[in-house]
Image 1 (tube, one colour):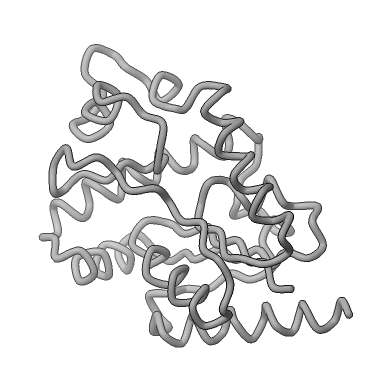
Image 2 (cartoon, helix red, strand yellow):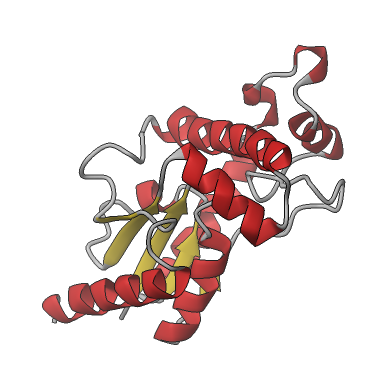
Length: 197
């Protein structure tokens, strides 16, 4: 019974590490749903439930004074995200990327909560490599995605994922290879699982 949540700052390779970890552990993956193909350089940071207008606003800034509160999913959208997380967690095993899962499942003793983070400079360099971006594009995307992901968790749950005690394991996945990050998390998850038996 291995349940892992992964919270990843932009450029930390969460979209690579989470699927590889799920495969390594032989458990289901609940990832961020794909973003609409609005622009090849645009990511939909919430992973779901943004309108086309809101997605474009997020991609190109916030024209017309549109703020983050207007870009965040509404209560029914948030309920759906939480339902999917709890459904996977009910099975007792899986890897969940993003979605505020570390907060939603904070009191679930089965779960290992992981935060992937690093300096902005290191994350920009890694994003450039992973996504084949130039530096300007990577910096622009980092600023938008970081702002959105932080706002999502803080607005809905009043939690800063970087605060001590929220996540069990914090890894600089720009200083450690993504493959080694997978092995580190797998070992920690299996250790936590075995300690509960």
